[in-house]
Length: 218
View 1 (cartoon, rainbow, N blue to C red):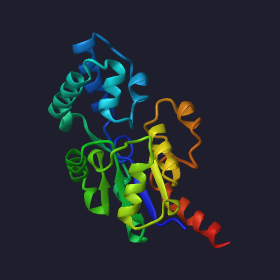
View 2: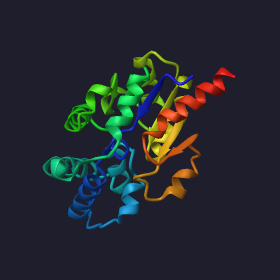
View 3: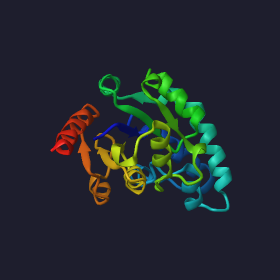
């Protein structure tokens, strides 16, 4: 029986893709003279920011990190967007006594701010963010932490996200996994990580839970 859903934030609940892409392009061009394409940048979605910057230039990772955050904060409210149907999907889950958590590699302060911008915050029982675990996605620690806070077993939950980091985090934590397709640029690449479920919109999550519960009952 599924008792909880753990949601990634960026690209799953809120459309921050353009914000993240533009922040990366500005930062990498300014300090490294690099202009990566969108596909390359999105391949890092879900990975802790400092790790991504370390991969680009270990010696300049702190400078890259600082510049990214400064630029991201400057253009944040201008570039961030909501997804149609998210509020309705979360409300339906909540009304059916499904516990909800956000599991993100973002700092908690910014994650909460974004959730409140789109009236999503009150749907969630807890938010597990960057500072809440020593090990980040793709390790299972953030998913396990969320399950502990929700008082459910990992096998009673589904981790939902738009990147392979989310799928690996859920699987490594013992959860079922679900990929959302609506922001994934390279769907074939992410599908190689074999999520348990794939959906076109969050409204389908409830149907997955109902079907799963019927199978469990049998």
